[in-house]
Picture 1 (spheres, rainbow, N blue to C red):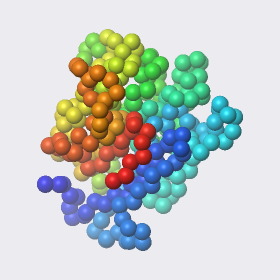
Picture 2 (spheres, rainbow, N blue to C red):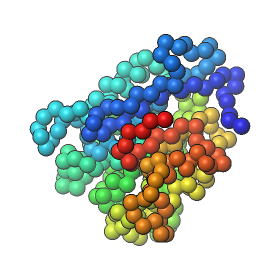
Picture 3 (tube, rainbow, N blue to C red):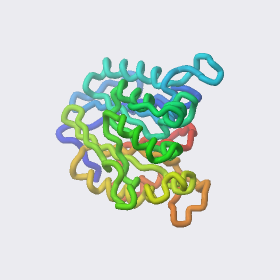
Length: 277
């Protein structure tokens, strides 16, 4: 039976801002336009980004012109939502943050900066959580370590393990409050990392298949929170782009709906596809 916050009903207004090369897209509301919240309801606004790929500024450094992307644009949206819904906004990212365009590459691999300016942009916006994507591993484990150390907010992952100790590399979840609502946030990354960045992770990290690890973390969160939010850097479903033998499938976000303990809200990244319910 689905948990409800008693004596209140939880309702969500979710703004999914998927920052890609196409810009700021997919604004979704769970209530019909013009409808009012019941007096016995609580209001939580979740703002999500994914696959930012280093686009901090709304500028195309290759073409040297303004572009329809950037965390600076997202910051404007977040600021306006915080003014509209004070104390009710949660801001999260589902991975592929520090790689993807010249600005990000320069500060990750050419002249490493501390803090990493892409992650520091999330600090400035005031994010609540981030889970790494597969492209976070492209510059090696040292660069990833510098980037995550730059975060002034929790980096969560339930399936990235550090070797040789074989222990979780990051905290498996974080719990935040918005008013009386306890929101548990966890994250998972596609195990394709073990194929695509095998040289970078060999003997240093292990990204385990998502479903079993998601079940484990969600079971822990179930009695602790009112809302279970999953950030998953893994496409919805379909065949993997690599040999999954001994690794795990690439795109399993839809599989979360089949778990015995299910999330209440899922932010999906990785596939760069627009999705409709």
